[in-house]
Length: 153
Image (cartoon, rainbow, N blue to C red; front, top):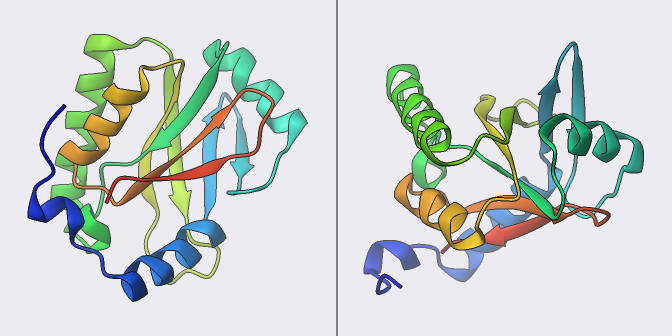
């Protein structure tokens, strides 16, 4: 395992609390064919999960990861596009069970962040991807459970 660097511990208590609130209020949308499914941290939607699990063939768990806006600092559209394609390429090289997703702020305080819903991926690999793209957290769920926030910092 990689040693923790100072960059991995950038959040103080008040920053983490503020971001925790923001991330929990967000909608995590997954595009499945013509449908857009919406998930929230701490809430379980059996019908939406059933559609997602069937579409990406998840047996154990699934997660949603965006590479955009590292450390929750707004990046340019060009940089976010670059990060998005880098993550897509990493997924394509290792895991065939993924689909487009969007992290959405229902209040419109921050721009939508495109990313991916990933099925049955190695947890350490997903964490490494999150850290590689300097994300503070990502969301994940075991099949049959509510979505949870997974902190990386």
